[in-house]
Amino acid sequence: MAENPEKLACYQAQTGVVESARFVLELEFIQCLANPHYLNWLAQNKYLEDKAFLNYLKYLEYWRQPQYASYIRFPHCLAMLDLLQSEHFRQAIVSPMVTEELHSQQFFYWAHYRTNRIKEAAAAAHAAGQAKEEAADGTQQADAVAAAAAVPPTEGAHRQPDA
Image 1: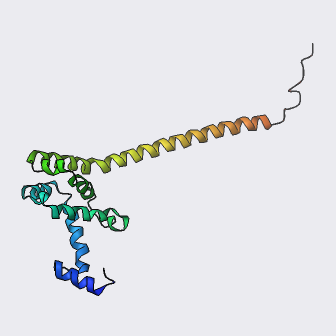
Image 2 (image 1 turned 90 degrees about the vertical axis):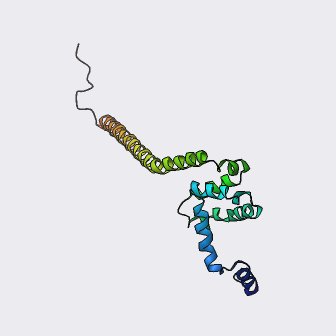
Image 3 (image 1 turned 120 degrees about the horizontal axis):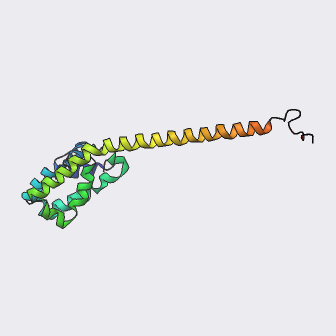
């Protein structure tokens, strides 16, 4: 759009927003979708029944592209964007109980996901360290056996006893 000044002027006249501000506004809006209480508010105020709004949500799918997704601080917003494509979810999110359940699940994910990944990484590193240690011990034992086999026998070591 930036290459064509006529389209840019038309866009600005239609929306009242300059193109440079559009990126920031859409980024802020899509991240608001990570908030279950905001989704509940949208549902209660019938935004989720408006075809134009639903088309706008489909338009926001471009935020999944890596060059845009890198700006998102709350990646749950993309999961919520998926859920909002479902008619069943749009009807269910009106319920305060569904909203609270979604909020608590989101909280538990945020509270424990990183901690669990750190614990898993530490356990994997510990297991890798043990495997490396065991491999080193096995190598040392093999080296000792090989070294013992390579030592020439001392004189008389293979002599047959006199009868």
